[in-house]
Image 1 (tube, helix red, strand yellow):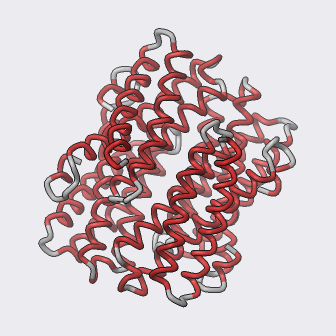
Image 2: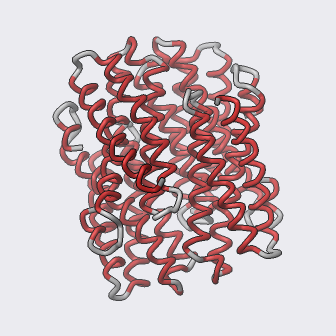
Amino acid sequence: MAHTASHTTMSRDMEQCIQECLNCYSVCTVTAGHCLDLGGPHASRQHQTALLDCARACQTSADFMLRGSPMHARACALCAEACRACEQSCRSVGGSDPMMQQCAEACRRCAESCERMAAMAA
Amino acid sequence: MAHTASHTTMSRDMEQCIQECLNCYSVCTVTAGHCLDLGGPHASRQHQTALLDCARACQTSADFMLRGSPMHARACALCAEACRACEQSCRSVGGSDPMMQQCAEACRRCAESCERMAAMAA
Amino acid sequence: MAHTASHTTMSRDMEQCIQECLNCYSVCTVTAGHCLDLGGPHASRQHQTALLDCARACQTSADFMLRGSPMHARACALCAEACRACEQSCRSVGGSDPMMQQCAEACRRCAESCERMAAMAA
Amino acid sequence: MAHTASHTTMSRDMEQCIQECLNCYSVCTVTAGHCLDLGGPHASRQHQTALLDCARACQTSADFMLRGSPMHARACALCAEACRACEQSCRSVGGSDPMMQQCAEACRRCAESCERMAAMAA
């Protein structure tokens, strides 16, 4: 994506948001598998759904931005909500597990970035 | 999906909405290729983006519902907006082309179904 | 999709395969959540991965066919393998659970349909 | 993803391949929009399909690796083929357009990385 910047009119904010979305998607997907290994509340339907919702919303949000869609701010708003829910689930279920803390951090950063994108277009 | 109904507690409204989303996704994806063949305004970035946005939003909305996500109404709200935008683009670009009329109809039905799902959870 | 047929040159076999893929994607996604509720081996990483792999491969295969991609047979071949692995996992983990039997059936039908598409293009 | 490495047993090769896939997905999606703006052969169905096939295959391949799927090598093999087809399409259609050259490069790097992953598991 560093390459992409120089040839498009995409703003730096949007480029950073795309990166946060793809990172958060990646971390949530890895974490979902890790949590199935841990079992117990980590493998609960509630927590797994939060992780998969967030992963899907991040992919969708990145996709709308990469396409230069006029609706990207709406997709970012959905993504920010899914990220906040997943951050909360990771903090509540995860205790001191380092992957859960890392996942909560990725969700928080992505939520903040998406909230900025959503607010810009409002 | 007819099979699915009997073994889950999924409401009939939600099942129908999932079907509308998967149908609208399918029709928009087929239509996007058809429009590239037609060229001209059908192959414009604006119209293709409306079709691909709608296809992606429909997949996301179906996915949240199939997972039984507590955030499905939010995903349906995004989907309804993308469907309305795509319906409008198909009507404006399409003239009397039968595939464009069919796509506009699929978008309208999916938008209405998603609007109902979004309103139920509000 | 019934609507789609009349306006495109898509073969009946391909249309049926797209339907099997979207149905299998739907059933696997619903089943993954159901299995998290059941817990135990149903919520194991191995079984959940088989379900999510299959769901993703089905989406990808449907997508390639809907786009009329020259590579759709390759995507169908991947999908058929993921369906066979998921069918086996559902039969091995599922015992007499009706959703697992239904999921195994959806996987089997989709695998057979995708194998036909893959063979046609070979 | 740099963060992910320290907490998982994922190999460096796989991590790099995931990054190449997400980069290639991003570049192909941006390039597809750019090519619709350019029109002519850039907006042809053949070239757009090559770009969208590649974008979808890259997402699928990254997804299988992030889930630690036993079938990731198969998904990487599909991705490598889609990348090679898209690289060729970009070189054939693109002439000296810098975004097309960049896209061809992203496809080539991703193809090579996916080919390594596919060969490792064979």
